[in-house]
Structure formats: C-alpha cells, structure tokens
Image 1 (cartoon, one colour):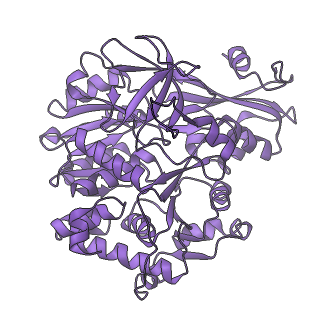
Image 2: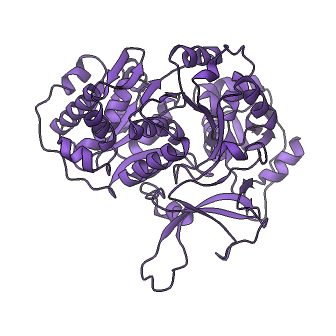
Image 3: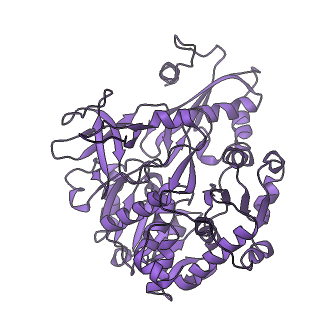
Length: 514
C-alpha cells in the first residue's frame, strides 16, 4: 500500500493503521506488557503477517482463528489476516476446549494463531478439526511467519467479509456473525465521531477483543490515529492503576465491571485526563452511574447500546444523562434505528416495538446458517421507486421511543440470558449439563439482578437422587467458562413442566423456583 493509497482511502479495515502510519509514523499505536509499538512499525508487522499467511497458502476469504489474550500479536494477526484477504476469527480466551472446537469446526478455520500453552490445552480436540491446516504458536513459529517472502495479496473490496464474531443465540451453540470491512470501518468512523476521538487520545481495551465492543476500542482508536492500551486485568484495582499510569483518556466497560470499580478507592486526579467513560452490554444501574459521576466529575458519561449483528446502534450524549439516565439514546451517526410492530409498521410514541437497525453497520448474516439469518436479517418495506430490498437487522429487543425521539430498553423477545455483558444461550448451558451424565432433565433461565443484569439459574432433575449442587457445579466448571456458570442450581425429583408443544416451560419453571 502506497502513501497515496492511505491518504485517499480508509475503506478496508487494514487501511486504518496504514492511514495513521502515513500521517504520523512514530506515534504509538499499541501499548501492552511488551511496551509500545509505533504506527509505522505496527503497519509493517501487519504487512509481514499478511505475507506469512499467504505463504501458508491462505486463500481469499479463508478463516484465521486467533486464540490469545490481549497482546500485540492478537491485533497484528487480525489486521494481517484482513490485509491478506482472509477473515479473522477472534476466540474468547476464556472458552474451554470443546467450545473452541465448535468455532474452529463451524467456520472451517484454516490457520490458528495461539500460544504453546493454549495449543497444548487444545490438543485433545484439534484432531476433530479437519479443515485446520496449521497451528502457529507465539515464539519461534510466529517470528518465522513474519519473515516470509513478500507476495501478492488477494483483491478485496469493502463489501467483502473481514471477520466472524461468535455470539450466543437463544438456542444451540454460538453463531458466527459475519462482518464486512465496511461494517468495521463504518462503525469505527461513527463511534469516533460521537466520542470525539482524536490522535491525542489513549484508549484502554479492557473488554475481550472477541467482544464487538472490545474490538471497537481498537478500530475506533486506529481511525483517529490514537493509542490503544491492551490490558488483561485480574482485579478491578489493576485496571484503575493502569488508567492512572497510562493516562488513559477513554474507558469503555460493561455494568458489572463498573460496579466493581466503584467499590475501589479511586486515585485523585484521574478525571484530569480520563475524558470520558462509556457503558455498553446492558443498562447501568442509576446508583452506579451516580457513584461514577461523583468520582469522575470532569469525565463525560456515554451510555451506549449495541448488538454484534450491527456492531453499535445507539448512544446517549452526556448532556442528556441527567435528564434521562435510563435511556439508550438515539441512533449513532450514519445509522437509523426504527421501532416496528410485528406487521412492519412504525410504532407511535411510547408504544413498545422491536428495535430494528438499518445502515452500513448491518452485518452480513450468520456464517453457514441461512435459517437463523432469515429470522434476524429481513428486508424493509421498499421506498417508492426502489427495486431492490434493503436488509435490516431485527434485534429481538423490545424498546419504546418517547416523543423526543429517545429510546428506552424494555426487554428481549427471546430466551437469551444477558449476564455481565455476555449473551448466554440457555440451551448451550443445558447441553453442557446433560454432557456431565448427572442430569436427566434441566432448564436454564435468567433472573433479574441489579449487579449482573441477569443471573443464571439452572433447575435440574438428577439421574441420581444423591447428586448435590456442588458436584454438578464442579462438573460444569470443566466444560464452561466462569461467566456461563449458574449462580444457583435447584434440584427437583419430579419431571420439569412443558408447554403444549412439548418444550420446556421456562417461565413456569422459573416461577416455581422463585
């Protein structure tokens, strides 16, 4: 890519760091445990990674899995795969081997980039991934990848797929949301515009890069030519120390993390450089918001809503937070958010309806799942003279819009459990419980919780009357990450109630347990 290319265009994902490198080559792009990496050096590493992947015969559109914690290699691999003409698949480092196996098999990952330690943990499941040709571990193998000879990259345009982000659905295992270069770049431009991001910003990536809001910290920063601090925190106090040490100007987190942060002793003067804090992944409790504003009086609060299928959708400007702290705001720039009835007509003011997002951030659908795609991605009514359908994403969330145009979240249409910023499929949890061999029947559901959004409960009919909740929980820990574990397990001797269609009656089971 020439300097002229990066001056004129930012259409592809890998154009973002290339454009910043052309404008300010020595400015810091990334900072992690290894130190800082300037934009020119970072962009060169992306190109080297792309050539290395092509040398491994990566074909256009083939998938590159990335199973790492937050570190420079994670970001280089993602942008390198995109520059090569491939598709990167970020895998949450908290996932267990069987869950990683599902992702590798589901989207036919060709090359996996990970660490030697993680590869060893995955060894029992890797033989079940026949499409996986190569596993590259950090260290000597990664270094060799970056020294491959230069080659021609595949031709890519902005409507081509760049990434697959896996997100839980209300039924079954996680589905892969296909995102184009246009989705990712448009999202970065939109978020950077309303947050006012600029080259002097230093944003912290506190959320997993496999989470759309987490990866958005990277793309938004690169769009603005800003710096990203990659942080793997163990305790909330670690995050606060990093905010101070690195003089972070922007923090985006989920409500449970903010609830933990407000319980800490906040260092004086943090709001002298922390220009804003943003919330995503669920509604922030008013008490937590008030505590944050008291601790950070000079930092601006942004309340946001998004879904992986559209990356970001709405935000509430700081000037409106005091007047309507329970609102999710209005549509982000270059997007329109509709509130529709089941027949597709628009709802009146304060009438509940489904949140529907249209615009360039609407994803490409679910990987290899036409049925699920058809349920969520649907055509809008055609405008006069329009001959082609426009596809919008129907969120499954019920909202209302007030007379001033501000949106308010009401609830979900499906059975998805939203906890700690994660979407958890009840059936995936139930499948894990059945796999232990300890349960005859089980039902997972969410219960409202001020700290988590929802807490997970599991009602079980055991195969053995001597089963205890602790024994089952210990078995589930070997199969599921911590955020998917039930907060409460209820054992019952009688069969679980079912509805007229023979399906588990989650509502009744939950009511009987409470």
